[in-house]
Image (cartoon, rainbow, N blue to C red):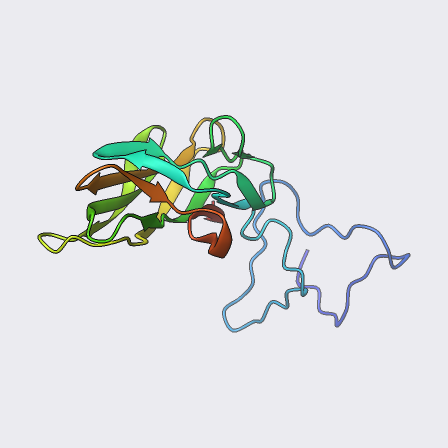
Length: 190
């Protein structure tokens, strides 16, 4: 069959499903052509996606790396984020994901030395952001990190961790108001 040229293609009844191609085929949009996307976006575009926040301050001991327990789900399009037990994201759709996080720390004045926010994949550090105060100890900071990570769509999982090095005592990871500590991801491609 050759090329079909028309202005409009619709279902016979005006409601229903219009199928282009079949499983395994590729639908291509030529260079220079424009694809109009409905205001809600295309189904599957940047999905699945999630964002979770820390609802209350979480204490972190000196020289400790701890999982950040982001327990308040802002959105979770596939219900793949566990906000009650493991505090991890296990998307069941394979692809590349843009993963982002921010960890806000609060210490007493002049007490902070080194603070870090880590994105873990499958139990190991994958991305990190550090704030190092050197000899001029600080009061707090909000290191943030983002990275693109390949996920297999079955067993790969992501977690947020934090590290604190303070002169004494503990350091609070900030939660509650202002949404200081958050963790999220969305799929950007196959």
